[in-house]
Image: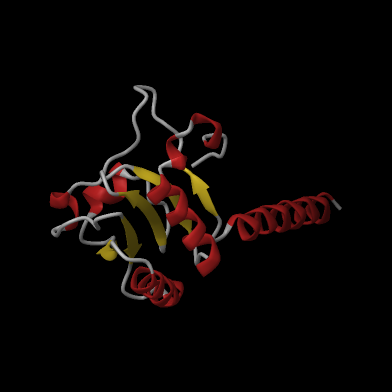
Length: 154
């Protein structure tokens, strides 16, 4: 009897965790400021190329990640639509230094970086095109630097 109870509790906990993970998947969230009051920064050296003039969409991917392919298409389309925006894809397996620095826990992870290199938004999982465009609007307008937008967690 005790085994059935343990199995039941395990199933319920698993369903709850799965529901919460699915609900969070692909959501673009504001990036918390670290204790020193600054945001994480992406540099030209990190990317191996120049940042976008207005913003950069940095995608962490792995070779066998199916959602990474769809994310690549979404980000490429958005970068083509918005002048001054670049899309840069980083192989997470070959850049573990950046994976650790930006706390990438899964692929795809997308960082929305403003023109100065500040990470202002991020998403784990396949983001919707409309959400990426809205995040870019915040990065380009500079409204994401307002502390009232910092309530979301990373």
